[in-house]
Image 1 (tube, chains in turn green, red):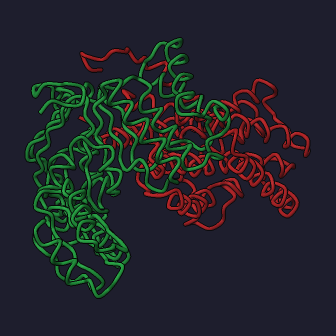
Image 2 (image 1 turned 180 degrees about the vertical axis):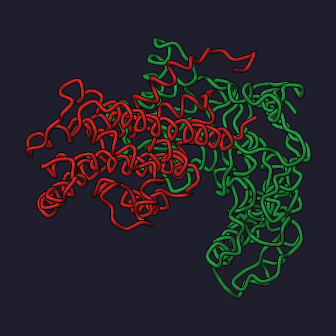
Length: 344
Length: 265
């Protein structure tokens, strides 16, 4: 399938086959995953805490050795061509990895110099990126005084300094307020859409994955349990339902009667009736017309589209939110391996 | 460097920029400078006022305990170098900055040299401060101004050697707090030396034996020779020699440790 930038199937930004990372004690944080990310697309890697998202990112960015399997990033093997991989990628890892004693501009200077960028280029590009992420006013202030959102934006700018072809973002919006999250989404979308950067984005937020990702992989307990576009995945688990509550409660059976032709009635709607639509949400207008013609007044009408949480539920038997709570609980009791990113 | 790399990173520029960062990081954290500089001076003041009568022991090499005790301050600075350098490196790992560095074409040698630059700057500042305060407090440098310069060189070498031990500690410890944990151990190591008395005046056999095998004694005696004796080739050779051996061994282990931590393809 062509990517958003019209890339052809042979333009592979990231590919992995049977990728495994095993930690001490034989714990498999990543257990044989396959990936195929087209150049220029945003690939969302969705899963709860401890699912193996960060470990996957660490292997793909050469920060962790691969236990088994193979992976290529920007056409370079992560095991044998690490330097070429690092030259082609930028990464903003789970925690904004910044020195609190340095300013944004000093970070840019250091990062550019370590990459070997010529002085004039690193200055120009650094200033440009600082402006782009809205940190010009704070560029000479120590990072210690930055908010979480400012740190995240600087982290992203640093990851982009050497103009990488592939960008890894490991839970980039965790802990951010809605405004900062939205600004970061815009920037990520811009990078993919306008600059052709391949983005590998891990997230535990359904909305983020839904909004940003061209393709998604859902990972749970080290294995990919579902993959596809957000629309494909949602369509796979179910059709939308419409729930109608009549203004006059004596009309409840009439409501069910009127909804019946549009699909299969869904039980458990005490104040009205609900139907799983045979032909999708396009039927909504027809339903309203039918109710209007029958002169049945509606107090409330709701369309429930399948969500990525429904996808997660269908594939793992748990909801993503439930999985999060479970992971947090296991973390508290010390049972959770919590090995993401930790070297053995 | 990758054959496809667009840029050509220079080792010297990497060292320069990491050194710059390390020095800025040190200078911008008074909490890492003030205690590391003041604590040895406070101990010097306490020892000098309380142990002055020690100079009356027959065979004691000087009649100024300040001059005698001053040497210890330089070694204490070394202990602070272990902890400071180690904590900085451990902090880099905890907050992810180390991973950021790993994702650049940085060379382990640049990282080691860069990390030690702040330690070196602090060591130079401490050595100069101790000499100044020692002289103001009535101490003297028998080897004169050239001796003071050699003293600063030896003190800096010792700080670098200890700082390199700090790098090993920083790589092994999972948190800066864990690095702090080795502070008491190092202090015991310092006290089991000729820091309070010349070795030939230590009466307890086992203590004298431990002090004789403790390299710290020779580094203290190297510094002390410049302060008390003048130019003592043997003491200086042993002082510089032990400091160099520790530096080389610690640097080798630290570099290997950093290389193995940078498990990149």
